[in-house]
Length: 345
Image: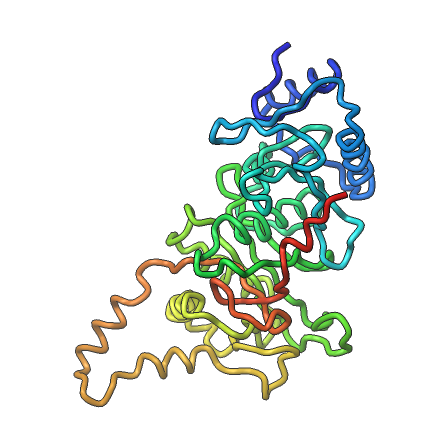
């Protein structure tokens, strides 16, 4: 029986048959991974031990999308922490030998899966914005946040910027479209702690991080996620968007508030924990920036309003006050060094 391309393993016949059957059925990791992080970690540790001790029955190769084959050995794999506050929750990843900070595959269910396959699903019920609940969905969130945005699709000017995984308690939704995870957003719930080492809690729900994959941008998905956030917390009188809001996210907010006047009094740019002295009206900022300069004509202002924001700006995650830096996009929270998370063994 031939080995499925790209998976790169030489498992026993029964495992090969099971893997071939899964591939033929179009099943992907998020569809089959048990909600058991500890069991997954133990399986990955056992496999890593065979690599480290040279116990594989034959040489294992993994085929990159470029056609290049990478030998699977201990020096080409490493463990990544899925949750920043649960270091025991780890996944084993294969890195590009030409760029050891770029993940090309993840070890799940005794097979190596290309990162793009980790982001796919065969479940037709996974469509639209869905709450992250299972460990498999947490892995998808990690890949989108740390691998895809953090390494592959961030602004080239941010070459020194890296990102921590989200908290295990992070409230998140993944945006699924046509069988693929194409984006996500996360929120800080009212009453949740503002950060480690503090007793302060958020005083209102906060739209904290958001990302849309490059090929799906300029389709209004950022605005759709902001609308979903507002509808999720329909009973709250005030909602926050994490400070600082970048120009790109500001345009998303601007378009949203122009289309939804009922939300203009609810959306605030906030610093944690979101007391009144830490809030600024986003709609007021929109109105002030739309005011024509003294030497302009009223008609100029109308033309400007009709032409601005006709395409959705690039969306990418950012992380708030904890990171002390404004990254590619708008919401900047939890910045750190990706390399420190990729600890071998």
